[in-house]
Amino acid sequence: MERFFRDLTDKCLRRGVFHNVRELEESIQKYIDEHNRAPKPYLWTAKARDILEKVKRAWYVLKSRGGLTKVSRALEGIERRLSAEPEGVVCPA
Image (tube, rainbow, N blue to C red; front, side, top):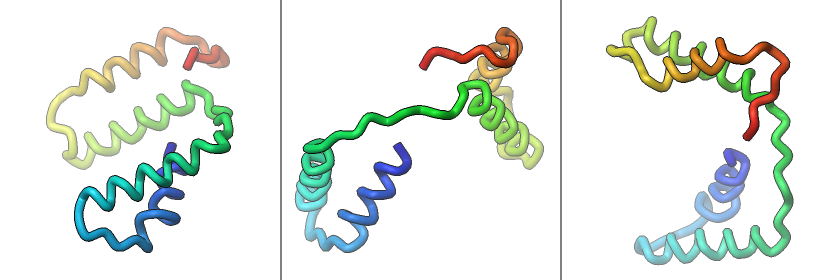
């Protein structure tokens, strides 16, 4: 997903000149239509556990720096999910 938005920005938005929101929307839609003419499937290679561990570490860094003032339900859910699964089990997408 990040790659798509990077390409959209580089190929469509950064060099564009838009006089109003409508022109911007039309340019984005044109890029999407072109992109979808030859779609390529995305093969997800990251393991869900690795992604959740990374998010968990980021939450703790934010919390240690005062960025989070209350316990997050999202963080609690991540911790529950990680503790419920043995390592090596692949989460469904």
